[in-house]
Image 1 (cartoon, helix red, strand yellow):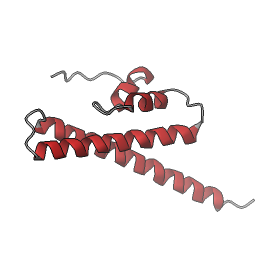
Image 2 (cartoon, helix red, strand yellow):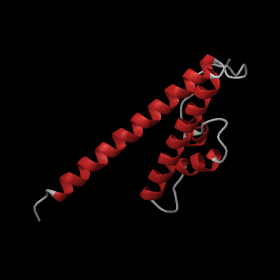
Image 3 (cartoon, one colour):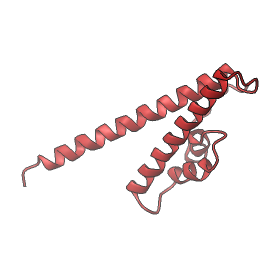
Length: 110
């Protein structure tokens, strides 16, 4: 198992954000690293899809582990659960910040 830490850049960020084993996630995570054609809304949408894919993968691994699949290890299951939890918490913080910014703008006097 390779446990080396490397600094994040836009090139390897898409590889980190992409959940392994989920079909179609490579295209979703690749759009987040660069400038999305749709702007912030499209980038946010693809990030949420990536978080959803990670949660789906985590749920699938949990189910397979509980059913006794010998190809699914406890370590892989726990790692997948932590990745999906971190992604969800990050998305939740972004949502809360966006809502706070919207409230601040709406409360500004013109």
